Image (cartoon, rainbow, N blue to C red; front, side):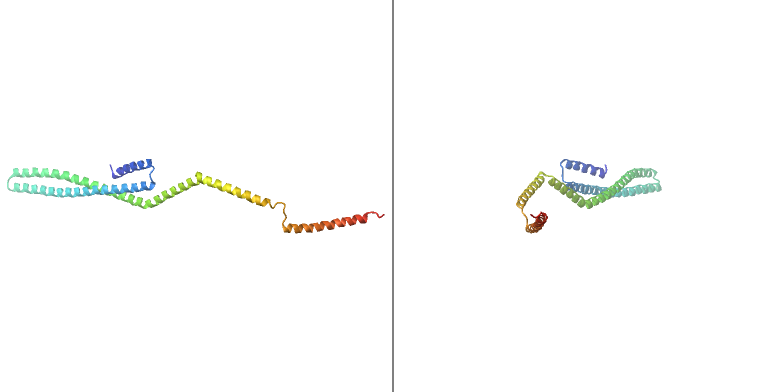
Length: 223
């Protein structure tokens, strides 16, 4: 299983547990970053062990190569001395060493391939971690904004706010009633300008009345 598979399983497990508990989103973001950091530490530790194993395998491979060359030299020496039997034995030892050398060579190649894979995964995970850290502040701020909006919405639609507006409307109605009572005292009353205008109108009417009386007197027959 690759580190990303393990990392995904761990994060999903923890996130599901936090969602069940309705945890703070900012805490979930911190958890993701923490899991990524811990995974990086684990992978780097594994890489360090593989590098150490690779160095050991390289030293062993070099030693086996020298040992194989040593047996070959012994076989040649035995041939020059007319000891073909010893040469055969030396070559047999060389074959054993070569077989072991091939096994170590395969192990070394496997270690190198594993190390290359880990390096690629570490690089990818590091990029994702850097990206997560860069987005963390914006995501936390966004979560706080949503929480504030939700709290304000709840306050606006809460019973206390509705009661407060109802009391405000009641008080406003009382003010309307008081103003109506005050204005009722002025009903039927005339202001100064109106009274003066009425006097002028009275004079006009009186003049018209006198004119009509005079016309009637002039038109009536004299006795």
